[in-house]
Image (tube, rainbow, N blue to C red; front, side, top):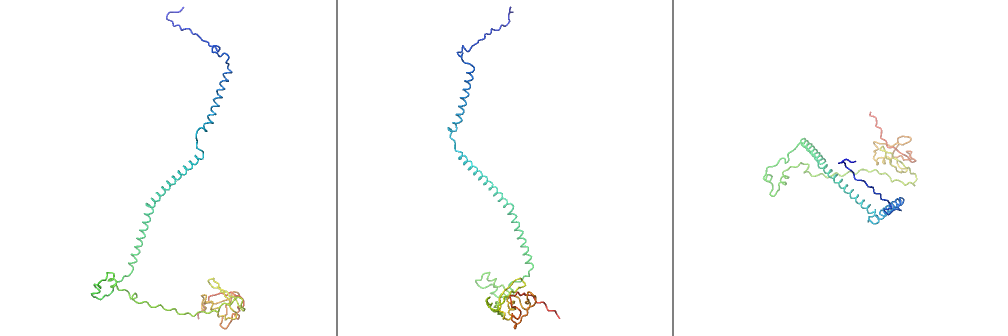
Length: 275
């Protein structure tokens, strides 16, 4: 028995709908899974078709064009960077020249000028000056000058130059004719009675010449003087054995023992002992 005022819930009715009532009595779980698999396969094939056909349907530039555009852009960018760097360096260089190098050069030049003027001033002070003009006879022409003379001409006329300037230059002295040393011409190699002599000088030079054995031995001294060694200071000596060479007007080269090719040394004479 229910008390008054108590709440009574409405009765619940459960509706069961079977597959037979829906008209799919013969549709099993296996058919459901098969239908789902076919749908997934269809989606996969459709996605693949879209991915394959999209590049063909969308217009694209060749890769080479992109590469060329990229290289040109890089070149332009590098050029702009180089120009900017060059401009920066030029600005710094001009600033250095204007603010550092130019003032330094001006200071150095000013110091050199001051040193030069100081040196020249001391030099002029140490010199003895003399008055230009000297004695002048008082005359109207000398005071006022000739008519039509300019100040420069008047000053040059009043200026008295030293005597050695006004003096006419003496004629140059004619050089005296020097007595030349005559040496016979060198005989040919094929001639008979010919000997070759080498003259070794103190400075290391070596002179070679051919002589006839029948010539006077005095020709050796003339040859030595001709190459620049005077016979009053230098003498000739043989190399081996080392001995002074006896030379005389009446003595031939053969008499002096020069019968084969020989090397002679130019040596300085020993000073004579003072008495």
